[in-house]
Length: 373
Image: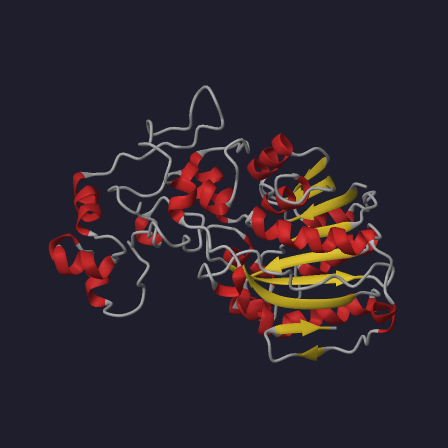
């Protein structure tokens, strides 16, 4: 059976990929994607079937659209919508963006929803509000902080995941069981996937632009200045800006010299035999994080970043270099999404158990970094 999926704040579709593509989980069909990033929606359309809506979700809902029926709603309302995570929104009476997300959950008659966001959400008052609203809608919920590396992504990316389900489905097993572990023998699981595992076979980057003949050619480089190249060469394996300062102080920005602590990932090299650090939207700028290639004197390419996020090479990105970088950095690793999708698919396919039907709906905060309601 194929279940229907709605992806809100979808971006390029990393989360959709984990649910829809049988190489990850499969068993789902995306019937609607909503985002205000037009280039990201072009990417989504190139890879998935289903309707796309470009624009602000609240403006779209004000038009009283016909929201398709769905089994599952997924998505990550941008963290700007969480007042505790953006102090500048104090006193702002606009609704947090999780509210229209839950409006769509209600309008679509979804049986399960999955919301992902920054780790800071987990211990915020905003999460308590989300759980209370979900409870009023008839959902039971659980929340936790998951590390994408524990589920096969070659990247240590931690996110808060909230899953809600109606009593008409079996209580999902959450958090999903790990598929990988930090050490090979730990938990009797395969070790975390590493940078070498996913980009070690790539040759030198070709050119400096997206391939003219194929949107799949993202393994292109940059044209560094002699000064930038000298900086790259001064950073050793696993090094960072402090190594640059020790070896080539004359090449080090004055602001870095003045700041003697913090920022150990800035201008850092990835390690071959570890997962990547979190890939963000400006991974092509080494001054933004640990984004230097493990052994070559250059930042990682778009193709390397896409692989480190978990995108297969046949996933078609659309847009400019900057737009595609934003899509990659904002994505949910498909491997993490797939682990959650498997939990949702199993819950939808089974009859609800007596334990699930009789479970308490009272909210409680556990000691093991999980919240249930």
